[in-house]
Image (cartoon, rainbow, N blue to C red; front, side, top):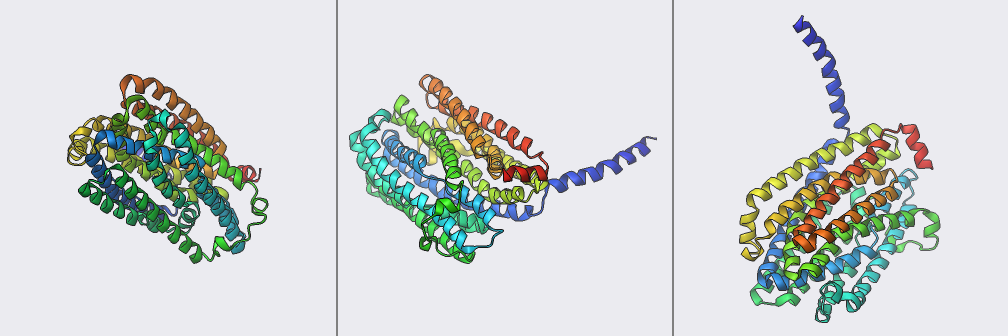
Length: 463
């Protein structure tokens, strides 16, 4: 009797299990995971090169002077990311809709629209960084003597016009090219950092090295992105007619603004926090805090690049009403990222103390606990990255903005309380709470909407 019951249960359970796995491993899974692999390998290589150059700068300059460099880099990035449009997100969404029309000229004008936004924002950000540093720099630890450093790195901001090439590479599936395009810039950075360390070039020398390598990486991404456009049969956006762009693509600018506002909120937690730690606890504390975040950024970049793979796919699935595969693809990538996150946390726990002593030096030993705490936060943000892609594909950019706003407000409140009392690690604790709130709210939102039937999804897109 027991064997009969077991046979019945097995006969029912196996088809159900196969159905579940079939829903999880959707069509295109292998290609998607290969693309993720290219991005992971390229980003690990980039991160390794970048960490070596960071270690050279930190060891050569010492915590106090390196902390000044950290404040300048963080300040420039805050200004740039507040004023810069992440045009690749609206470009991908609108380009997916234009694919059905098959008009290369309309796609040329669409990419031209994104390019104009990118170029204008880069110029405004570079000029604003210098002007605002002159007016308000002392509020977060930048003295008038540091204005020269701000001006040097602002040159890199002028070259950061990555929206159009990034969208082109992602839509054309050239994830390997996207992953490895910036390696040359980072190789140049490590060579220049070595020269600065050997020559005792000081903080100005290291800032010039960072600027040149960043500009070279941006130029390479721009070139390979325009090459991808040619391969897709899209004419050069620089030759497109400018008149009537906003009229031809209604909603593009609004979508770009909403994603830019979301990015602005994210900047508070990714760059401005270093300025706050520097203002409250001093440049040495900012150096240790920044170093921990920089090491953890290896994992953070994984989330950003995996989102690059997922977003075009899920945008097409949602646009076609393929809700089952939409859910499965998002859950699949979340599971893969969970494995990556746990592996990175275990590796940091085992090897970080040795690597910190060998690299930046014993003066940065406090980085270890900050790093472990930050990696917990990064694991949560890795989980949230596919959810954010799913929400954007659903045209829920304003809801993503609302969740980001709530999480950022919580982050600011916790950091304002914890950093003055517990030092730099208070900022890492604030990151953990931000990760919990963001991951939970995004999951609830996209899973609830993904239960909608394809017909309802089509009505939602039409509305």
